Length: 131
Image (cartoon, rainbow, N blue to C red):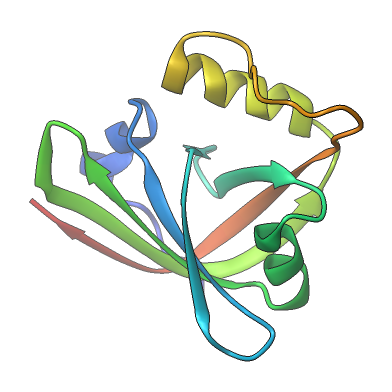
């Protein structure tokens, strides 16, 4: 059942606050990666390149957990557990450029030749907030 991210914590998606994204490897072990995130009012957005471990893990098993620490106060955080509601390449290039503007102040500079971007929309099912 979808859960709402509390209004008091939505600002974490407006600042360059890194999230730690936990996915599930094929053998069941967890895998954690720091990522840039966005929130559209319903879904948490995570962007990656097609074929990377996050893409493979989330495409195979859409269960996910992530935590976002407030860069100004690491005791203030948001944890979201949920599942992938959509995987799409549509709008993924624009998404990574928008994230890059927020996190480093310029269009995404790390693109590799031939790289395709993919956008995952994660539906929050459980939300915990502190601070």
